Length: 227
Image (cartoon, rainbow, N blue to C red; front, side, top):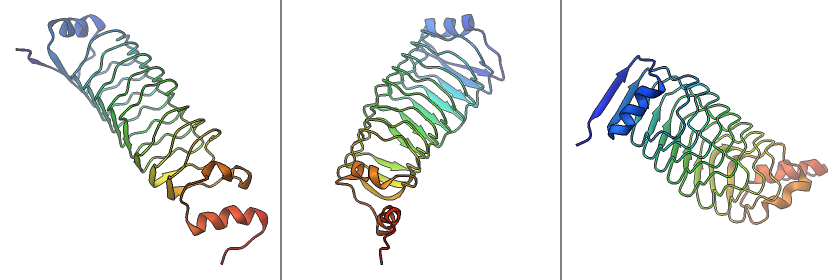
């Protein structure tokens, strides 16, 4: 039976973590420093990183299925081509992280900072996000269809060709986001900040539900007042 290996306030090297992976044991890393460490292609499925420092660490093509990242400082870390099936990222700072071509199927991202992160060509079926700061993030062609997005900030994010059909926005922001080719049919935008959207771009929201206040803001660009 696989056992749990606990590492606390350590600065482990790649070889030590590879050895744990090879035995099939599950690692619990607490307050460890893995900054700038190359962890590419290691199977860390089911591991738990608690309050670890992961800045600029490389997880390229690593297996991180059912892995948990809790309260980690991971700015600039990279997960290109990695598998995070049913993984959980909760709390912490993942700004400027790279998730290009990563598998995020049934992944949960909760209450964390992901400013400037890149999700280009990521596989996101069943992705769940709540309370996430995605300012200036790059998320082209992702599908959020029929999702309920709560406290997600897409300010100035690159959302080109994203699918928001039948999506419900609760306390979210799309202010100044890049939205060409997006689809919003059936979306409920009444609790979203859509500031910065020009009337000439309003056709993007055809079929979406907006509030009277939002409609007034758009028409105000023509000098019209909605009473």
